[in-house]
Image (cartoon, rainbow, N blue to C red; front, top):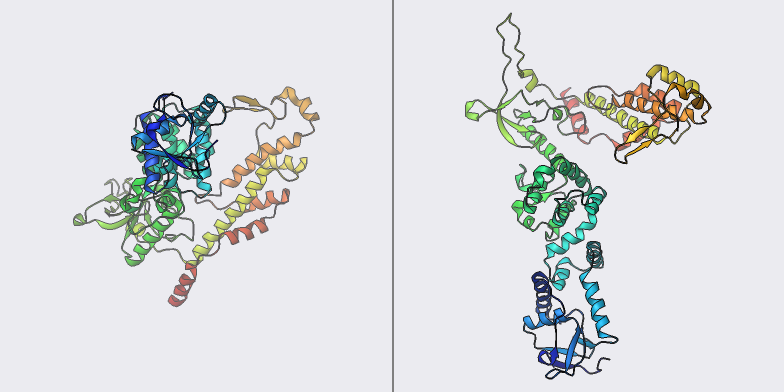
Length: 518
């Protein structure tokens, strides 16, 4: 039982016989934790030591539990401890001292990784600051933050983390992955799978740098300057909260943002502003896929963009024109070559070149933009139909309709099964093989129409998707035909698409300009 009145006991009167070894790192953590508490005017111990009476010569008490903490106290020059009172440093043990010591040491030394993560997160959710938690347990704030962040490891990474699918990845690798958003972790998984032979040879620091290079943006390199980031992605939130995950980001020159959609929109608007200020500015692209802008609300919609192969970098002193790359926002000087003659019958060379018409055409009119927006809304409505078809939450068309659709579109076998390589199992929902000898079973099967429709719907979706991208027009007539067969309203889907894709505000200005010009 503890005494009612507190009394200070010199450490010299307390016997402590170590019964286990601790690592140098653990000892330093204990000492750091105690020093931090003393610096704040608090007692060095979070929990009191368990002691008992001692009959050995020279000692009045002996430590039952907390021997490592007692030895750490000696290292930081603490000379006495409080016994009794409201906030004692030591209390008398109740029960068998050996069992108490064993239980306390077992719990303290055998926390699983998940238990550590849950414990730290519970403290953070209760309102404790990371820096305070780190000070009390004697760890770096970054260590605490990264352990806590492991709870945010995406589902895609949970299985390889638990089974150690990537034998070369350590806990620090997974901590680095967890610092990215869930969406980016999905992309990182594919990146790691495809590049693990080169990644496995990198140090942890270089591995982190490679992920940052691939999936985050260094704000200092953005051409418009003074960019603070989206403020919502893990990198921005970490920077706003003292940068415990990536301390280097406290340096403005190393600040990152993981929100590529946000930065892409800012880059587009920056480039559009540059073009407005300098109509002679040439727009180029490093990727051919970036040359065709179909979204009429895009600030660069209607602009002429030179594809790779039609331009080469060239110094201004050598006749290069100022250009800006829409992929990166970087400003360079380029030369767009003129068409060349092959010298044979006056035919033009097959060499990829660009004419003045290509580089200086007119931007699209408001009517053209509205037509493009209408197609965009049609595609959005058709996407809703495709999702509806794939959900199978409707009445399947009758057999005569199925027959007509098959005659128009054609399908492969509806019965039979497929092999799932991930599960390593063969699936056959119908239970019938795809062969002529299955005719009798198929004829008597009560859900034959369902299997035929499931196969036919795949062909219909494939047909509808052909008009969902590129220069092809949306398959609106086909979509209306199919929608009528499964009780889906294309009119309602289009209304929803109009609400989701409203007219850009910039059109009002463009309409006024066209009216003034007319």
